[in-house]
Length: 220
Image (cartoon, rainbow, N blue to C red; front, top):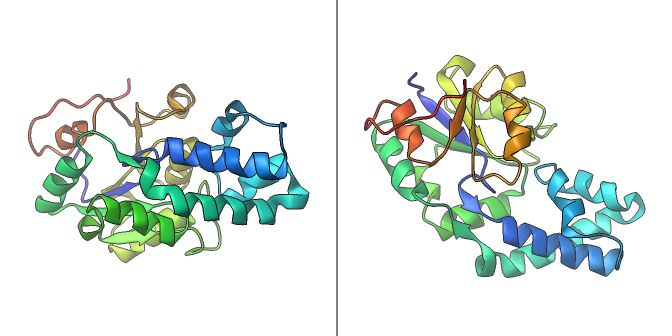
């Protein structure tokens, strides 16, 4: 299958922000709910909009917790964030082949663009849709539909690549095919949503797009 558009989640898909996210959460939780939560309480809800995540821990402090998280997250962003292997190489090849690339993220535009700029990925993106650009975030389909509108594409022309169930659910609701990445912290959960493809390596996208003959792994 060859698609004319590939949409990506950012965190956990193109760039490795897991350490940053977990450090930001633990700083926030220790500041507002000391001694009550661990990393194991955070991992299952990664991918949700931030305010919804904080409501899981303490609805009465959720808005203040978001502010604490965001301050720490921006301040320490570049100290923690890393690029996943082969991301830049593959995105450049896809871009050169005329594939429209885009980001659909439940994070603020400030930190999305900060992550893209850190690794020189922003010029490769034809659309960037972030939290607040639509009324509803992932797992609702609104953000994906907006991205498709911005690149003048239909759902059957697009593939959504992500690392969380919110990416796959949103894509399914938008009638867009899906690819899950094996470097996700939630891989076993993702398999239950029957993605069209499982990416063992970012270079598998080249095989899916019939660009270089790289091996791709299609979910059975």
